[in-house]
Image 1 (cartoon, helix red, strand yellow):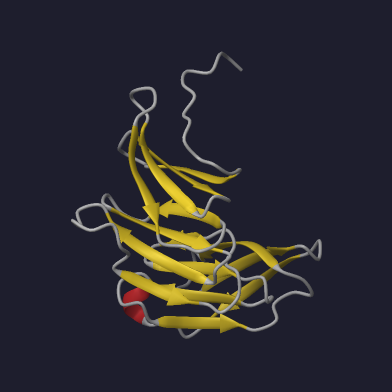
Image 2 (cartoon, rainbow, N blue to C red):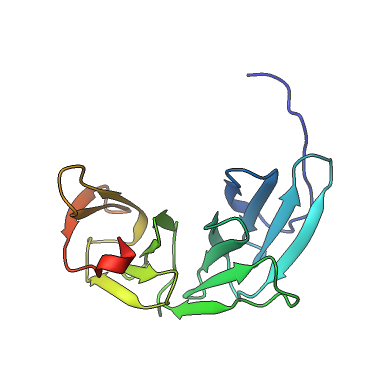
Length: 179
């Protein structure tokens, strides 16, 4: 490892997640301070914007396109945001009732692992709930990952939990336009 290039300051609580944009010099950080922040990593202390929209710890943030990103929180909400918007409010929200953990994205499908042991899949295009795996684990589901089979159009979901187990699921019946 080398020396740190930059240190960015600004959150009032512990950081919970860091996400880098694939093609732009942008970074999202989420925190226990109920906010997440957008940074331009080319310059020190390069805070672009602070986002308020959650009422509890923000657990993860992900870029989902060039100008859009998603956030999840212990408040039970997932919000989708647009950088081009003139107001700093989400343009699409999902209420999950239970605290939402580390998000994952595959194509236009968002996977949301929940403290209540459920896993939900949503379309980030329409906001439609595509699938729910009820009581997927014995304890809170912390993380998920989606992958499509090379040989078929089947979609597989992997989930990890506080129960020290990882499960895999064959997700059927997803609409063609969400694959």
